[in-house]
Image (cartoon, rainbow, N blue to C red; front, side, top):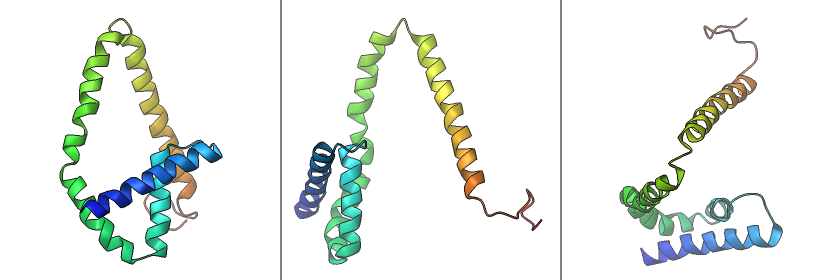
Length: 120
């Protein structure tokens, strides 16, 4: 399992380094996961190595949210006078996300279908 964690950390560091050197507008861990995906496609034996560690991380995923939750509680005190702006930002971003998702779904849906799922 240590080997699996080492592989995951190496790809995260590779992603961070790639983003830093190239100046990509994505987070380093995302770039690292894309590199890991490419490596898993190129080297299928790597899948068995990474799977055990990934499954163990997924079993304890809820523990990884504890630091983020504590950070939110600590930071909540600094936003005490800005609740209206925070609520408006959350509501606005939710509506915007739903609208963009609907537009993407409509754009990617097969042409020639009506709402009932039948052909036009």
